Image 1 (cartoon, rainbow, N blue to C red):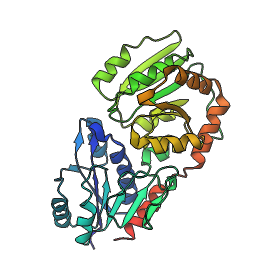
Image 2: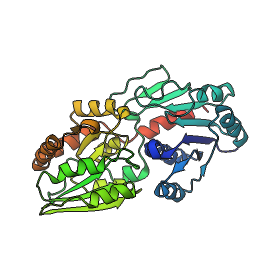
Image 3: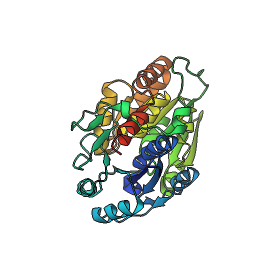
Image 4: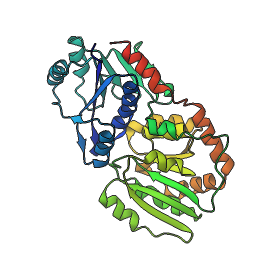
Length: 335
């Protein structure tokens, strides 16, 4: 008997970021552990490290036309058992076209984004998400985490001993399309605390801007390119300062104290909910970023070990790491 084949339709790079692909890799990890064949269909732009990450999993990326009928034909030719659609930019008739050919469809949505797609099953993995359909799985209990994230999950009941200089990771998405890093990292330096900052620069111009920043006494700024080892960098940090994208749920799962900047409108609902639940510290919106206010918030957070520990513990309590199992169960029930 042939193994079922699940096609993951997602794109990465540029303004798409990498979050859609990264969470699909988490689902791929779970499906393949169950003996399901997985293929990734889409386009990866200017993200060689992401291509390498897929290659390490022996997953090639197949380019497919944007037209829903062409995708349907390709899926039928490949013998697909089901498709997962992950991307707000996909033609909204894609799901209906696939379903009309008796191809089961799971659509990933983020609050109101992506809900126009027709599907047999919807998954919204975001904190505080509510099902918009009787066929929807909604909430952070469905968050998808890759093997490398789950392997690094911390015990927040036994926090690491404080270091002389706080270790801070600053990351604003795999592509940082709005160049948030050079705007936000100076607020960290303005705390005037001893810091060892690792800042992820998704593009050469961002790296150049970061390296030109004046570093205060007792502070160190290390600029690194986007990397598939983000979970390991986070796990080695006392604090993460991040955009409010899907990687935030990874930081909660890891048990890492986190401060967030809302970079773009589709992050607003998740940002608001995480701040309201007091599982992160909020630094505001990039469009109206208040550097002085952010520095005050960051200094307070870095000065208070107990507050950081409480943030991390509350966040991790919401995330048991088994979301991908729940999603895979529901998806495979459609086949």
